[in-house]
Image (cartoon, rainbow, N blue to C red; front, side, top):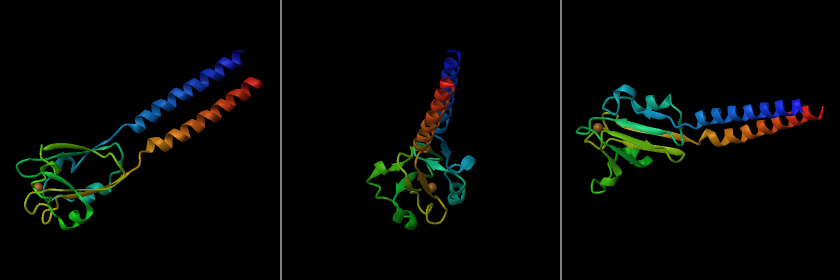
Length: 159
Ligand code: CU1
């Protein structure tokens, strides 16, 4: 009976540990676009993005002077050609100066500045590749480990 309760305690502890670990992994990251420089001219955003991993649920944070810049989400073709969306469609432009964009889906996303030649000549264009959330795959491996632990515990009890 004593070995039963200690095995149960062991499995419970393991379960608690895994839930804690899982929640820290699943926590969304904020990516401050351009770091301290923010969203501005003459910054290499492809270099900046290259070193980051963007996961579904993460946020992109654009910090900028909103009298000089804004943020448009565009498609790949518009990104390549620096085509600024029709200004009458104002809901596509972000202009608060501190915009937080949640990356809800995986795949490529493109952002440009809509002020004059900032995208075309001054490098204000950012493309990111959003990868699926790690939490879902981790969850299945965690439950597998728990199953193994439970089997080991059962084996201990039967001895
Ligand atoms: Cu700009």
